[in-house]
Length: 60
Picture 1 (cartoon, rainbow, N blue to C red):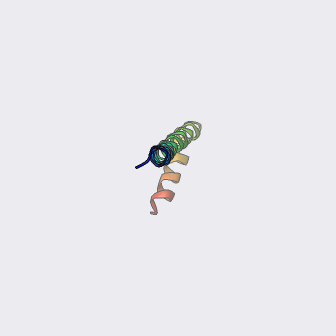
Picture 2 (tube, rainbow, N blue to C red):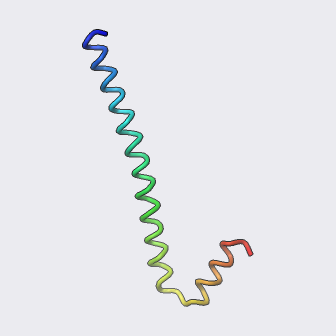
Picture 3 (spheres, rainbow, N blue to C red):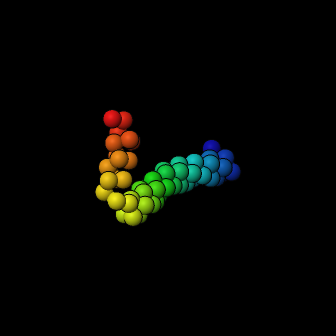
């Protein structure tokens, strides 16, 4: 392989790896942030309201 082709392939590979890692970490970060927001929202609710929401979400 010529050096220019190797450099292009290396750049392409590094882009793909970087994009994949950023996507996975982004999903984890968004889920963690959403879970934290849900916990904060549930703190202000009464126990009765929390249980009603849990029953509704579990499909009972």
